[in-house]
Image (cartoon, rainbow, N blue to C red):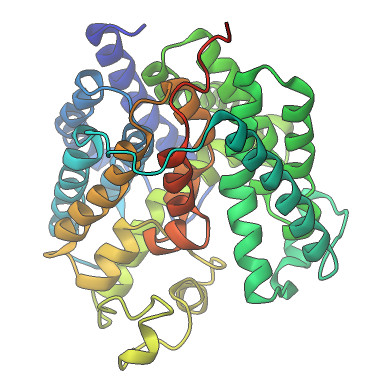
Length: 420
């Protein structure tokens, strides 16, 4: 499945499933709409935009490829939602801006891959010590964070407690770095180096973040990393990326279509988690941000905490809280296309910020050049989901994406070669 024609067929099938999934999502979510009268407009736009997906059949695998395919799915979903949206904003301009933003993002994210010259390279022995240090830091972070919150509650009840969670700044940053970057990185290393017990320990440590943070993200991360490890064992890296969204979304669509179940049933809960929460929510966030900022001032990046004291920001609360207070959907975090794009500079300049974001993520391509594609896929496995749901600045700093780039840069390139 690694030939260009086969990949092209797979990404086009994925595009179709994304649109069909949103038709079904509209029957469960009041903020997403569908109308038979406008369906052919939506189909025409989706077919035209799906030409962009053929770039994924032509490009080679990289970290940017991984993140970009998730963003492609999100933007395709927004273009579909945009046709039926009942919010009042310049929808044609918003759709064009989103499509152009993705294209501008893809150019560096997919095709800038030239390796950096490694000025600092750890020896294999020192790298093994680094992995041990990551485990020590992770255990210490879990112990420290547990003193502020540790509740064993069912997933259905996490929202009863989560809004009350407060951690000191240092603990909050360490929690993001460890759970999103350091432990997935260690898991990939131990798994591919043939240390299953240590890899299992990493998964246990990741699971311990669930009673601390009370997020579905933390609960499902170990299973997600195992799924990526299995997928990449049998499929080429690019096919693994596409299948990692296509297969779960197709399964959710089939389950809900065959059973006609409610969201409280087992098939419904799966559909809610994958088709709605994982993908449709990220797409609909663009719809909501477009509506809000059509009648409110843009931020010019003042929502970034280090910049807010330097400017007169029209919003004193984080944008997610502003959206919660306005629309009542809960804290509505959103991707770089909504935050660094629509919210910060508006529709006309949003493609330029997307281009800049693509250049930032291309640093990861260059830092990881020369590493096995399967390792890059597994070690960054959590970050595409992070990028779908938070601004790029938050992903880079709070969730440790920049730290992962540094780890890739200093890794010995012969680490995974067979030992003599």
